[in-house]
Length: 254
Image (cartoon, rainbow, N blue to C red; front, side):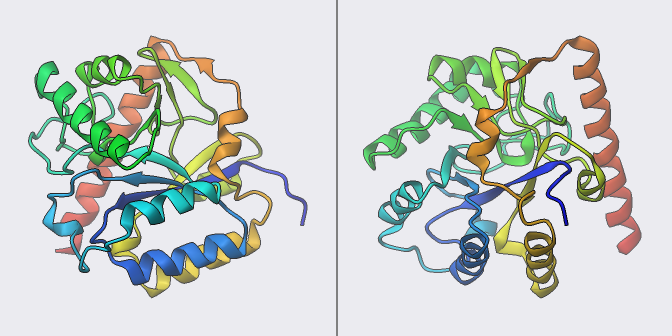
């Protein structure tokens, strides 16, 4: 099989000292086997009880720095991961947020406190991953004032400039991404909630599309393009539509 088609990067959300370590390490073994280095979103001060699965790992930050040495990329995933508003923000995949709808000063303080925790443990990053994929213009202002310039979100087939930031898009549809002939996208993984079928699906993905599933750092080699108002409006509509489709599916399952 020729290694043509859209390149797939992996981002892993909800990395905390008290996550489900068995599932995380199982997925890591899969990444190691196929030499894929993901981007991982680390919650600096987890207060989201739904993410608390195991006893906190005492060497968590040292382990994270070891992953960084192995080529894994690190993003700050919010601050506490507690949703404080019901605002969808500028990328309305969800109608809840840790940041969207919050005053600028409060957003700045939360992001700064998270950054301070990272720095206390010797970690620097300019990549931000918003909990719930939700953010607003105050978020971008706070991020830029704290020297964060990259955000992992949005839809598209390559990185793009918008709001003074570089966006690295996630997948709108995994099936469509696998059929696409070119470009880059990101598959979002939450190992805490993965089941046996999910692990088997990713194993098939890594095996079948070996050469197309690539390390996240490759995405940073792609020159970003400018995204204007019309394309931004189209992205907003796609995200809003997807949110409503997910809601209807969830309602029908009840």
